[in-house]
Length: 235
Image 1 (tube, helix red, strand yellow):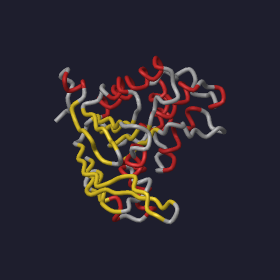
Image 2 (cartoon, rainbow, N blue to C red):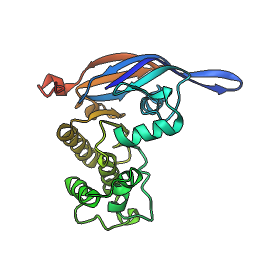
Image 3 (cartoon, one colour):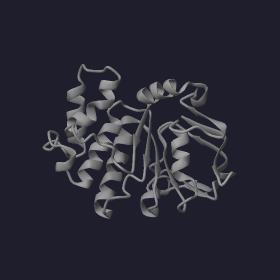
Image 4 (spheres, one colour):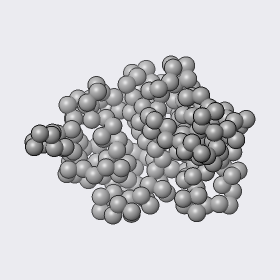
């Protein structure tokens, strides 16, 4: 489902190149749940952005579901993402003038999918425990509730792949654990490939696979406890 080959990313600092990612080769099969960990500055968020096609690499390529992302134009990548990719940001990026339900419906409206959209949005908000809050605006919701709206929105277009960048970073441990449990449940039900960046080792271990970055390189790539307990990747 995800293939990265020779992926590198550098920025210019003081007139010199500053490498952030160095020769990343990575394959993620369909329906996998992969966590990416590592110290601050190791390149986790940069890697996630490249895998999602939100940023362009200095060199290398990324294929999602067989499509070479960087063979597409910027508009082409946006169109591909709208149909295949969901993204949960560390900051929720909810539109303040829209209700929870309206925020969830945005990806479907951008795709021109109106038939059954409201019913799907209501069902998703119900799944994340916000069935009674769907008419509330972001300012009327707690941080945990806003994150659950963002999660429901990410699943609105039935993505084949979901990327989540520190989805529990602004939440307390109990709420964060509930969010990850919902990610796992939705991942299983929708057969969605899930790639999660986190600083929390306990949450990372709940994945099928844990990839650790150090200095812009993959330091280790090993099974998580989901595999050890028999909850491995579906075939």
